Length: 126
Image 1 (cartoon, rainbow, N blue to C red):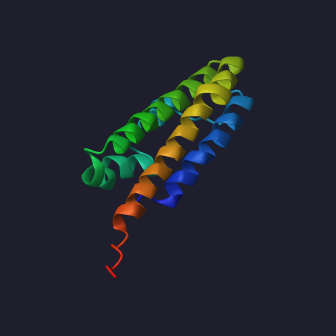
Image 2 (image 1 turned 90 degrees about the vertical axis):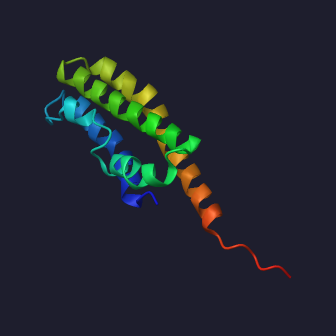
């Protein structure tokens, strides 16, 4: 199952990115590192246990793609901030990034619901 910490870590990215943008890139986030979608806790689950359990599941594939886009946008925001383009960084952060962030969380919840439904024992016949 997807660790709760993975969800909270992704929610915290919004704050990290906003601080980075407002400090005009002084917090030293590295866009090339951020762009790797397999190094965070959720990415480790997606490409590890999640892949083993759900690789042929359409919802897992949707999460993988959404998560990849999330990391791409986060890296792009950092690149804009590092280049001094605060306006472009904030526009991405408040627009596309937020949409992708919400989509990732919604898909995680969808996978969790599927898992809960499939792992419930069948009710005994009466």
